Length: 427
Image (cartoon, rainbow, N blue to C red; front, top):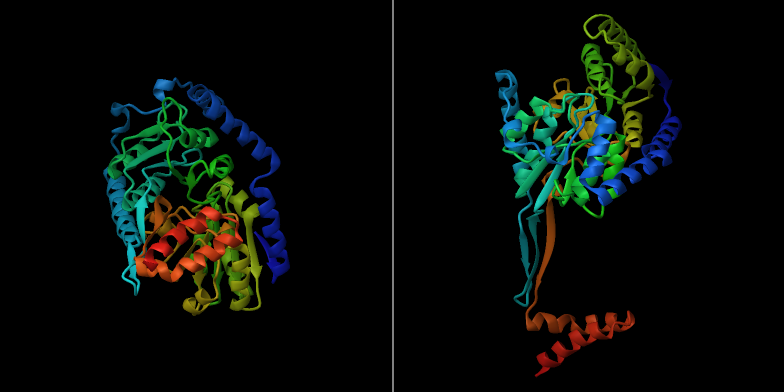
């Protein structure tokens, strides 16, 4: 792993470079071509890209799975685990829903807000490098708890043309039966604009590779999206009190995600040495994997800081998707954290807890977008509508202000709409 000393300027440079790499020109151009092709040629383009990228020959009639395809058997242990995850995620997201509210005015009228779900959501579940069965739960359940009436899932086919059985089983356990065999930017375009075989949606949610992420960015405005969720990121803040075996295990648990970035920020050089030794042992024994070794060598950065306050400053600059805090006073460090997708406190809250069963969705902002975005929640699938109900007395109190502003903005019809009522209230 790369080790650097207290380096706020270097972190800023790292972030700026990462932001430049989020959507390089060649990626934007390639995705724009895919999106436009699917938008203009529909199923034909969708099938062509499935052949090109997934190496699967697909006919339009095969894009949506038939009823006899999605009902598959899985091992009892996985089914039990998924049911436990579903229950936890449902309980968590039930608490997220904001209630409608109304505030009474002195004149007898009221103002307030009401919340309504979108009609239809399309959820993307990656399966290219790993079949993310947990992503089904982490996207479907928040949409269901928001009250979305129609939910469909899109996931790329395997080499044999089938969708991963674990993903299908997770869909079945969540009650989803509308499943599309499609992936990549072409799937996002199909969900956004619709084809003969795929009905368009109102919101697209779910993580994906750079093509999926860029496609979501490009179709935003035609549909809603959840957030920018690209390759996994994890940052651990630790001090001398942390168990180096736990820290090493947690670093590797995130480094194994394809294209991930991992950071260890610590005020103890001794702990850094011990963690590095544990990582070396694991990579030569229990977790001896060539790709994992490459990830550690190329994408793990250990930052030695002077204090935990400085560690928090580094974390805020990086704004990681996952932030673990393992120190003598986790709550004090958390008070200084402003930017992170999700925070994991203490020795027994590793990131895999949030990945699978804790309750919050594991679809989180990446690429420093946690500075202004939040993780997937029920609110992604709900709209807030403001409500106003004024009495004649209440309107009379504000009519002159309406007319004055309307005249300044040169909107005579606006002014008249207020004036005609003010004249009436004077009678």
